[in-house]
Length: 108
Length: 119
Image (tube, rainbow over all chains, first blue to last red; front, top):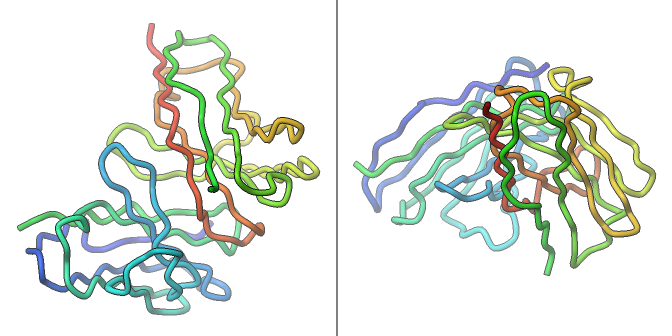
């Protein structure tokens, strides 16, 4: 089973700042089968990024993903008030599909 | 419009059985996998398993194998998650989500079904 470790656990930033979230895998993820999801309180997760760097339909271009192998990053270039939420990475290249434990992005 | 609509919240007692549902619309239900994901109170996301409604090919996470049953009825575009004997530790929000290929991201999610198991 591939274990995904996200850091930091909590990130406190202000609107307009840049956010950098990390996801590290316990073994290499094949073909960059790595996704990022956003979850707001009381809502289902929403797909942001797939294939490590491709934005899902309707996702603003301030969200970007990068990385390969075992190290991946989600960057939000300029935080908007609606971006404060919990973010999860997920690998979907091997079974069982696994999620990271999440990074909470909170308003400073 | 693609939608996954899940059944409503449930309150059950330990030892009872339960079957929750996820109805797909706005797309070809038999051409996409449906995954089930657990989120315990205040915790993260856990992948439970997947089913391909086209031929009922089903795969489970080792953590959930034998604990739940995933099924689907393609005639009514609905996937199911069921328990034969609930435990208090099954209390959680359960989400269904679809993906196009076995190695695909989850592009649409249901709204979630809250299951509460308490004596």
